[in-house]
Length: 295
Image (tube, rainbow, N blue to C red; front, side, top):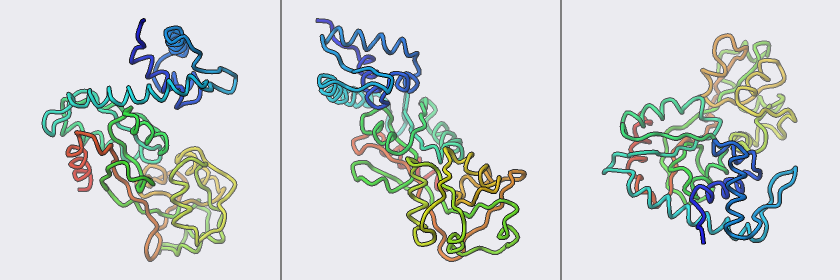
C-alpha cells in the first residue's frame, strides 16, 4: 500500500477548514488544479470518496470526516515533532508561523515582526491573516505557532500574554457637530448616533458592542468588511464608529476626512496579546516577545 503524504493530509484539512477547494488552495498558496489532483490521489490511495463536491463548496463524506479527524491528529504530532528542532534555548530557528487578526495586522504587525526578527535572527516568520475563530483553529491544529489577537479568547486551552491596552476613540466625519468640540466626550453621546461597525465574524464588532452595550441599543445596518472601509464610511458621513487607538494614525490621519475624540471617564478598550499552545516549547520566547512589545 502507498501511504498518504503529509502534503496530502495538509490539503485535506485545509479543505475541511475552508469549506471549498478554491479557498483551501488560496490558503495553501497552490493552484486549485494542483490541490484537487492531490486529493484525487489521496482518495485513490484510500479507496474512498472524501468530499461531495458542488457549486456551494466541498462537504466531507462520512469516510471523509473520519479521515479528516485522524489527519488532524497526525499533523499535530508532526508539528510537535518539528517544533523540537526549531529552537536552541530561547533562540527560535527555521519557519515560525504567526497568525494575526485583520483589525491588528496593518497597525501592529510591523512592530511585532521587527521585534521578533531582531531577537530571532535565524527564524523565518510565516504570517497568515485570519479572524479569531479561524486563527485559534490553526493554532489548535499546529498550523501556526502563535497568534496576535484581542483577549480574552473565550477558552483556557491556550497560554496568553498581554501586550497592551488598546483604547477606543470616537471617529466622526469632519462635518459632525461634535467635531467642533475639543474636549473628551461622554459615551452616552452614541445614543443619538448611527453607529457603524464591522460585519459579523470580526471580534472587534463583538468587543465594541460589549463595552458599549449601555450606550446604544442597536448598531446601524450598514456594516464594513475592514477597518479601512469603516473609516471611509465615516468620512462619507454615513455614521460614526469606535476606532481602536492603534488604528487612529492610519485610518484617521491628515486628509482622511475624519475627526477623533477621546472618551471622558473610563474609556472603552480592548486588550491585545499573544497566544500559543500550552504545550509549545517556545513559551519563554513568546513571553519575552510580549514583554518587549509592552515597552
